[in-house]
Image (cartoon, rainbow, N blue to C red; front, side, top):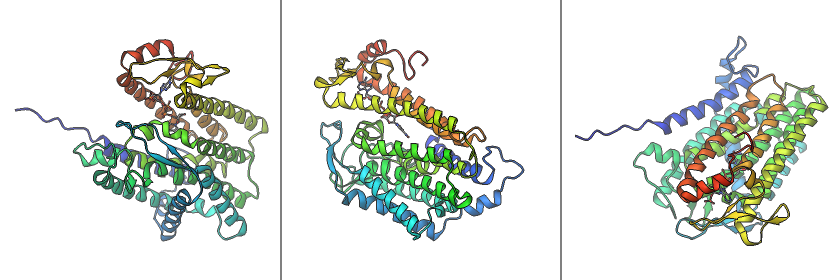
Length: 416
Ligand code: NDP
């Protein structure tokens, strides 16, 4: 009799671990003096009490989510066609994220300055917000799973296991209504979480101002650099359509949780930590780290733009003043071999990571938690690079080996 092999419950384990990590980081920053290992002063009681969801937190989050959806629908924007789907068709996307970000930040800043609300409330109720957003992301993933099964409107996949389908998603591009409607993945990838991250940064700066009557140099630099990062993301919003998330990953818990919980609630931890710490960071240190950040930013933006421009118009694309060099493949798509794409196969990841590291450095060396993001991101990018390498080997076959001989390094030329 044939034996049936039980699959390890990878999806379930991932969901528990990811959720626990986000909660634990909050505990470390807010109730354990920035330490990772619980110390004598760890306030477990305060932590548990802070996590209780409240009606106010729920209303604030629902209002935020709906506000972002309304901005996406109502603000003027252009329509851009996404990359071709397996059947050759393309979907149309609304591009108005930069305006949505500007309106959102202006609205919350104006409300705060006018005294209608205090942004610092978000800092004081961070735990309740965390629980609300986590529950919301679990519920939304359930809806998306069901919707993707019944109205996929394009590529979709069934695995026969609810846990796997819930975790990885069923449809590639769930939309309401299908094909022409509201694109859940593209919306969640950017709007509520990414813009929410910056609002949380503002909240941390406001909390510091309330406590100390000033915003520290390091806090100002972290917030400014993260605003730059997110604004750049929206400045190049159509470029997101070429990313693996949009082109290849189905929309399920993994992306929903990443987009709605992990991004805003952990990427703001440097600012959270800086409220009470490293307020005396020197101008020299902050200035040096900012320069390092800008170098990473330059590599990240330029590498992504080079590939985007090349893919959109390979015949007329110039890179660093010369016609782009490339390799023809049997699959029909060309692989760029000049500019940053001639130095390593993923220098865009390097530039992205340098920025992540610099935000940690701006928080000094008093706690490991501000380094969670660069550490986590290094893991994410390294595994992503390996996954992409496998996918490309499948897509391009022998051409991929040829390409790897032309461009030897994976991420950091001369090292890796
Ligand atoms: P890439 O933009 O690097 O895209 C990889 C794909 O590009 C490959 O699958 C291949 O697809 C194509 N490609 C590979 N090599 C070449 C080449 N030489 N010339 C032309 N096309 C090539 O990867 P990602 O989508 O992972 O990342 C995009 C950006 O998003 C990165 O800067 C990354 O740092 C960032 N990112 C940020 C995250 C965050 O949380 N902040 C998370 C993940 C990514 P094909 O040939 O089929 O088109």
